[in-house]
Image (tube, rainbow, N blue to C red; front, top):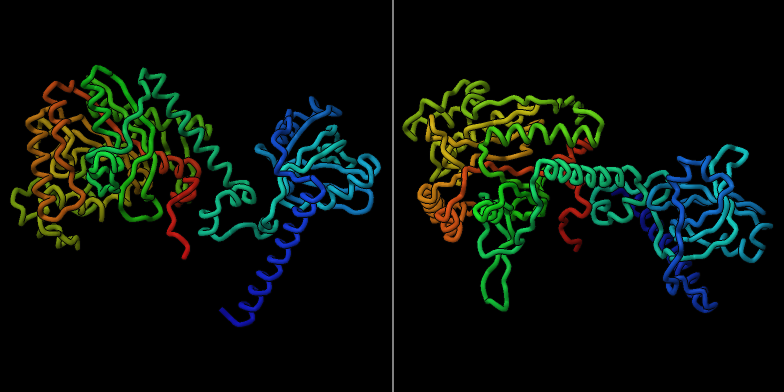
Length: 499
């Protein structure tokens, strides 16, 4: 940074400090005059900015009570104009000195941008055609002691936007629209699932085991029981226990937590929808996911064609369906189906510049080759099926080729959006796979699935044929709102503390 710029920034900070001091002085003056706004507990709001702006004919010359934050001030002399922002949008206020009196006029002129006020007045249209409210009475409800970013530059620094989301929402209107869209995405997912006869349930966030996925958990400690506990990394195992208990269709929308890296599509805590349905297989679940994505996209955006990061994505069924090894063969020319010996797969991976770690089997190698050479090429919705058993500890084996499973992942624009399978309900097979995962853990793999004795017990009681799936809600919101970072669709993303 140049010395000139550093001096300029220092001067800006000094100027800002002076402005903040003036605001504190104004608050102290209000308190001395027994006008402390923080003592006010209620203001009767009966109208909102967006309703007035969109339905002016119904509101013209109607008396309204409205409250909001001052976002702009204009005018001088006997007439002033203010813009206030409420939860629905902006509207202009018209203040005339002769109408409110000189003392009250001077009072409102002393208010600052950011202050929250309640007003009573009449709706009208100015000579310039601007829908406005002619103020009769007003009151200061909250004094803002901090300065909002100015109009033309706004709050642009991404780091500051995520840390101070409350300011981001105030000064960047498009941000609020993203989170209203997120609300609707979750609402319509629930609507879709409810209409199909699923019931929504809640399962524990804290447990003594972190199962349902291969991921590193967050660990905490329960003082009363004096045991370690884990934040859930998936919703799967408790939901399948409910299928054992006699529920045929269940789903949950909830936060899950994984102690892993952060990037444009990963946050340590994120939102999943998982569902489980008795007496169906992974093919039925794929059809449901197609319908779900079409339903939500149409409800939220009005259609199934999505513009995302200069790509046109078509969410209309049917989606492409292809085996993982077939896709690898298509994009690399290597057919991993023919490999029987591990050395063959290792050699093929090396030729494809994929680093193979100790302890990997053919299945894990297949996954890594897919990740590096295929994943980013799947732009249009594609169900990738038949994952190796080695990387699918909870999925049923394919009856035609037991090296693979009845599993799918949905990829869109090179990213995974959904993961589902025919659930493994053979307790003996499940026990063997858990033991195989334990062996990998002993070799140093910290993301292996733990041995869950009670889940084995549940399978021994009897899990009917079941189809299950998980959907990443954050990524779906990213797709439908055309955002390239998960931080832009999570209200309060995980951030490193400021020193």
